[in-house]
Image (cartoon, rainbow, N blue to C red; front, side):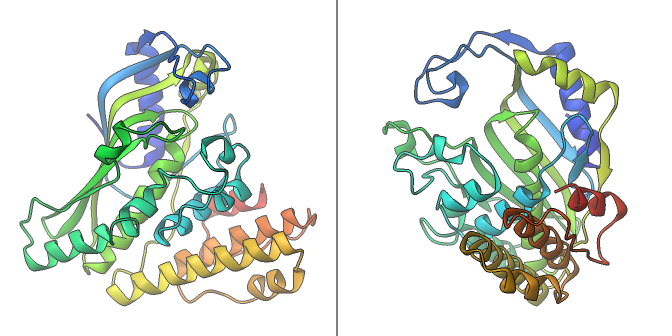
Length: 330
């Protein structure tokens, strides 16, 4: 297990470990799997089995590299979509091409993590937080993403996440994400951002600080044709970037989540409808919480780009210099 202060450090070390210790594996052949490019291509890969990283500061959740720029809009959009418990394919498709590839019906994503954790079978996250509130030493605070039914249906989506395990230890919330499979180069930055954001939300619901974030992968891998890019990031390590912490109170957690979900929904719908006035209104008014305000600046800038405006940049006083640079690069 690697022990790191920031996600950027863990990300760089993880790629290095696959390059130096990873085993070469032949391509998956299943035509329903992205690992075979849905039956279109041969995709051999390198992997480590049962790989784990521990990150001490979950607010330091971004890895900044010129070799693989992070899509910060997608990070915030994915977190808002997940905290709202939705599974529509339209939201992720707005931020990144290729989302429809994973949909069986071209309308929904059956394996959406947030939908499975918060709405599909009741709000598991709220339930396990409640268990910890009632019994701080609890070991049953595990929320499931993967379901037995996934092994019996034919689908383009078989969730990469198994579930999340929460522990209140030493007065802080430790969060363990259990992944059955983790693409370590291009997907990990978004999965880690999502779950570290959810950790902050859960810790604030409990009125406690965040403890370590732990990311455990059954198979930790990237594809052979990505080895050159991975090596560039290892040779010039990704830089850490932090976001404002969630407010740290139950009311603050709910307010942050509400603002984030509201901004994402209204800005996306306005951009898709060509309604500049809504984007202008949101761009001109600061959010009530710092985390949501950085999201507002990022998502509003993204909306302007969707509307064809390549020059308007929305800023937030809560953004660090590196995060401001990521927003400017949208």
